[in-house]
Length: 320
Image 1 (cartoon, rainbow, N blue to C red):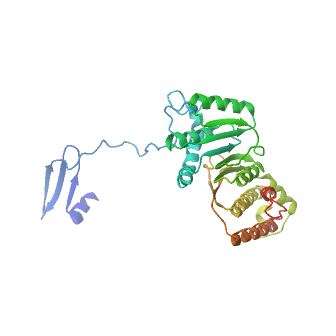
Image 2: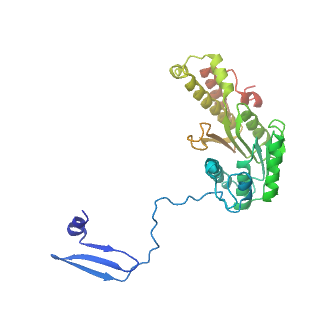
Image 3: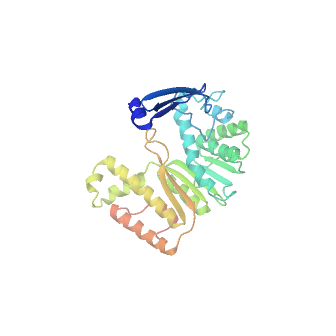
């Protein structure tokens, strides 16, 4: 095939190497081959197609990753921590464009509701403070005192002076003057509690990863609305998935009513967990006409699925 291309089409070919180039040409009915000085110097060829992925959160010198038992003292990620490390980086990759499009200094005070062991809280502080060089105060709010104590010690060891953890609940935390609210995998209506606190505090950015959508599923089961989706919702697994989509769709609508531009996206691959949706709201503005349209959409959705109320709707009083 190659010989045919050279003979019938191109009439010439060049083989490049660091030692010199070989030029093959067809002149009339005869071939000529000559060696000429190397036209360029090439670096050694890679022997693999897989290139190392550039991570937002690198591992060398990150004491908090070692203390969280994700890496060893040399910065090597443990085999059983690979998924968590990927999740951390995916989280930062998602948040980066949202934060970077805001005016400098917009995001200063951040609260992570239900921060748990703080994997993502630490990573966010590290990225904002040490990579983007932003002056921020990040607070992890966690109900379990043992995790609060552990995370505060890890933060102290890492020298993260703008990161602290406090014992408390979503409902009891003061969100006044908060710029960014995060609630990842808050169970069922706890996600609504977090979104409401963000709206109430006027947060510029609200980021939630919902979990366990029980409230709306109960409403749909009790309401027994008859509609075009009956052929799906007669099956428990499909009813569960439909309830999840309806729950989060209504959350997005309510956030839009209060002036948030919303996005719903995949958080991490569903290979790792089926609970992989991220709802993000960026504070913008909304017209009265759009607010009226949103109320109609909410009412129509509730009627279609036999829902008497949505917990976030109840918290905000949007339908009063």
